[in-house]
Image (cartoon, rainbow, N blue to C red; front, side, top):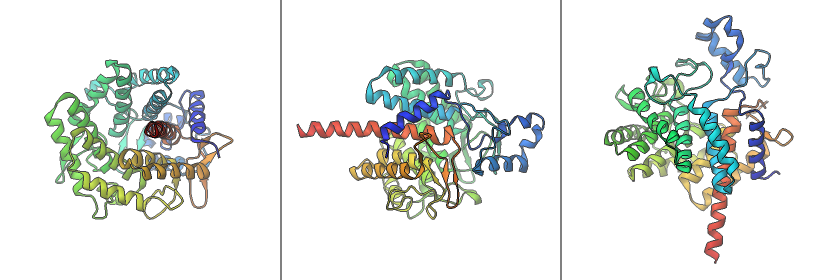
Length: 397
């Protein structure tokens, strides 16, 4: 079986060879066919078209003239991975690459004449059951991962060119996405929508909390606490969270549960509060018990292992190492990675498949959803493993 280090370098090389451009599960509406019929993007046809491309194991995008493009969130993930490799090796090539990608991200901000502050969205029109999001309209998750990448880079380079937009993004999140409706206080996913989704709100809270500390902003600290308390108040008695409040959001899955826990951990660390420790402990226990199998398989849902998906694996690495932090969590993360390599890695193509279902496998190469996440999570794992090995050697001496 190939090593984690080898796979990490192969995925980076594969992505670099393609200029980090690729296809995405949700990019079907980028088809040039819609240049002729733009009105079909919205409504049932647009939703069905996206789902067809997402779910079909055969990639119709070349036939339907859907171009390969860079995704801002995917680029943010690659930057975070490159910085892990840079910290682990001190090789300038990783930092230089991260800077190049960050400079590109600075040019991809959503229209500031509309949104006033730094924010980012997807490179495609996105039709979901709850809303239609045009290309470039900012969303909270893309904005936060880009902001994290830029801020982490600024910590290495001491360049305010990267830290200033990262910090500015919190102003967008507060001024545009903070909601008080239906008896809840939370951060919304996109401007103008009131759907309550735990992972989006908690990540918004975590980033606003970090910026509140950086800028000594007490109002932002309070808003972050309000949103965190809201999600914690709706945590199940068993430690679980459903995805969100709407009727079609009543499912429990692995990577969104992991998002919730990682965001709560970051918020608690930044605000130096132990208020949420019981919720984190209960949530982590549920996560480890119900969202993995004995052999290390990362399940998609609490009640169904399928589809097997590298998103679940990658988030498991971050949740176990950043939230769990114990030696057995590290062992579990390595077991999860090795199981994923056995079941989802294609050695000849040196990349991971998208999803394995019970009766079929979808091998489409998705950059933002699959390869970028794998690269960042594996680079993070490699760096943490190196650090733990160094610590063990120092203790022995």
